[in-house]
Amino acid sequence: MDVFAWCENDMTGVSLHIAEHRFNVNPALKPIVQKRRGMAPDRAKWLCEESFVWTSEAETAFQEMKKLLKTLPTLTAPIDGETLYLYISVANEAFGSVLVAERDKIQKHVYFVSKALTESEINYAPIEKFVYALILTSRRLRRYFQGHPVHVLTNMSVKQVLTKPEISGRLALWAVELGAYQISYLPRNAVKGQVLADYLAKMTGELEVINERTELNSVVGETWDLFTDGASCAEGAGAGLVLASPSGEEHTYALRFNFDVTNNEAKYEALLAGLNIARKMDITKLRAFTDSQLVANQFNGSFEAHDSSMQKYLQLLKELPVRFEHFEIAQVPRSQNKKVDALKEQPNWMEPILQYIRNDILSSDKREASLVRERAPMYIIQNDILYRKSYCGPMMQCVGSIEVEMIIDEVHNVAHPQANGLCEVTNRDIVSGIKKRFFEKRTGWVDELPNVLVANFEEEANDDALGENLNFIEERRLMAAIREANNKQQIAKYYNKRVCALSFDIGEWVLRNNDASRAEKLGKLGPNWEGHYQVVAINAAGPYKLADVEGRTLPSAWHAALLKRYYA
Figure 1: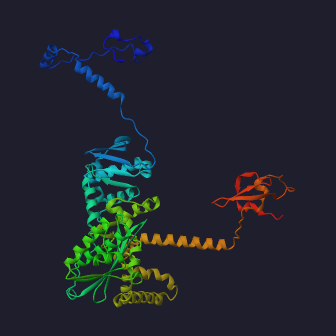
Figure 2: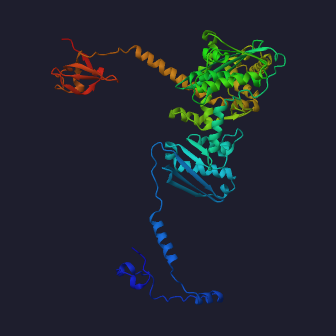
């Protein structure tokens, strides 16, 4: 139906109190006559010559406009756990963002946010404007960011900027705030290149675990020993390597595979990784030991490889030894391979952080995923090595438990006489200051101690100490959580010692607490226990299902604290 009236004859009857408009003006006042306005002669001539004609094209355009107005996009409520996509457009003086949900390859709008920038915000750098727009959008749509994974589609290197070690100021504050949400940054173009890169990384098996050449000039011609083992389970696959030099030095590596493999394939992957490491270290003579009878005998020709994947692994294994002057492989009993076996099963605390920084992969456990998102901004990867950002001084390299033991052994075997001497000099200065003030006042030397300490105070050393405290704040929080859990366990252990466990078996007869069941009359003369009932079932959580003497099952389950054994 056409709702527009093109002439007065098309107008329907409308009441005057609706169509008539009256102005609240004083009728005694005279109206002001406006000055007559002229028009440029060329425009006036054009208006006289031209005549307006409503064509069929105009009618078609008009109908399409009305159809478009009827089908304006409406906002959509997201489904629990659904992935949302965020588009942000930043201009010189304003920004706009739209949050959408993709369903059946159709994007449904969830919400819009826009804001005009202030005079100071206009001077932000382009990347700062984009992150600022993301921050304001996350604050405005906080419930969506807290309950859904959000993919930010942009061609700007936002993630690289927010994870830079030298980041400071408002960008650092914004990075911490955004770290609380499950946000990932995706390019607006196709991701086929990333899929191809992941496929190549999976198939090549090249492990860049050594970034610097080791000085091996004195032992390059001698034989090294390589011990390897790999395993696969439901939680993932891993490998352990021990590369021993002729002088007895051991280089240990614990690897984690980001792709699915069988147990035999994991053992092949461990051996191939060890050969690649030895080749990068310019080792020319190598003896490899594995506890896998299959791998050793297939390489030596005693066993045949029937499976296609085993044939490919065997082919790769036979190509690598060509680069060594001497190579041999032998099987060792599992009892002689315990150290490597422990390495492959050792959990790596750095793996969740590495997976999140590299591939935006988080654990299915929401609590663990939230913890990783909060910790990740404090870490950075350089040359495939994970570093912890420092508040003052250089970045700190992250190491595993094996490296920790080696570092602790090295530190405890080295004396530091210079540091001890500095401590003695500081103590001597403090004692000397106390003596001088004590002989001046003779009493109250404890009150003079703060003045002596302030006299020996060094501002630069204090700033370094504060920065060191900030560097280890995460470890201190972890230790506090461990102490809290230990205290709770001690309290529970003490309490449980005084608790006498009460349980009943199916078929036993019991009485119910009358105050809870109210089956008998309450009051001073009422019984404390009523029944008797028979235990007919035990729920998994502990409550008991009861039946009366006639065999009728009671509707509710009863806790053991409200029951008492009945003796006939």
